[in-house]
Image 1 (cartoon, protein in one colour):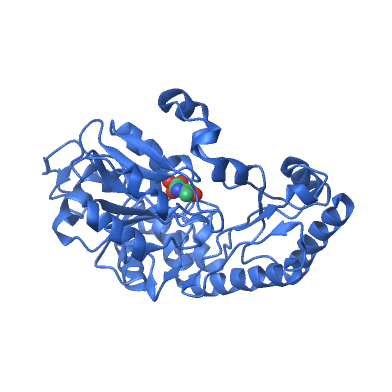
Image 2 (cartoon, helix red, strand yellow; image 1 turned 135 degrees about the vertical axis):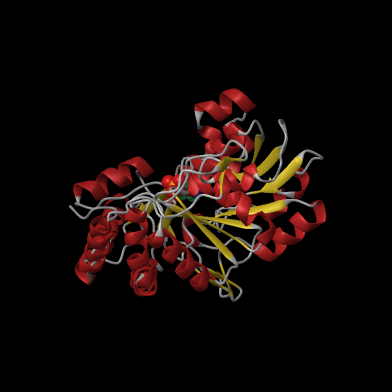
Length: 378
Ligand SMILES: *Cc1c(COP(=O)(O)O)cnc(C)c1O
């Protein structure tokens, strides 16, 4: 069985974690600070805060906006639970937006009419690692005085018109979850150029505690406000430092796999392939195809089962938020409210794409996909 994802963990990661274990300091300390410094210089942003998840990063970015109950945040429905969930936790309303039919990213044209006097922020998601149209999005945000908090869980490393994702919006949230493009097992990073709020962000990431001495002995500190328990432990950062150092090579490996797929599938009329506009660099966290169901005699779920029968692991990104019971029940969303995302959900399949895949693995996926398409072609 070819798994849908495998992390690339080598001796470097093992040595780094071992030296952290042997140092006697396992929680946030010198490894986390070094990971932040190196991440910051890679992305080219002023500040980076290492956290224990991308969800935590989104929560902190929203926390400091000083939002009030019933305020609204604009979010694409074609995404994962994380960002919308913290919006709910803060007593705000996630205002869902349909996706663009080609990119499947948030449909920029539908943002304007969703803005109300209560709207405080937009959380674009760079789906699969394809950067959103940030110039247009920032223009809308500036016009309505909204903050832009990017969900870049898929977008490391990605580039939009020469700017690295993480250096564009007000705040950018990265994930180092086990399946993401670099991993710390669980982890995240919040980047920003807003220096005025960085002390508060750091404080909020650890119980709202101020002046925390880092020598492990001092007991004197002050709780300034209720915070969260969102710090990244050194044990995780030890992994992250090594993963970061090889992110470029791992990206090149994924890009190569993506171009093998693109070349192999470009003439298959039954498939729609992911797009890569010339002014961006796709992170290729995901390689998601869409089935042309009108040209096939099987459903997406059957397609997945057929690939599984051919020993290929796949996944689906994502079941749109508006189809989940909480969002239907709470906000009265129906499938028809977001026709593009609803229709796309029935057709999307993510194929394996990760640096440990050999050419033989990639060819095995290509052969399996070709085989299923041929067998079920109308
Ligand atoms: C994985 C993921 C997240 C959450 O990341 P965590 O680090 O697990 O909190 C957020 N958004 C998207 C789009 C994701 O895929």
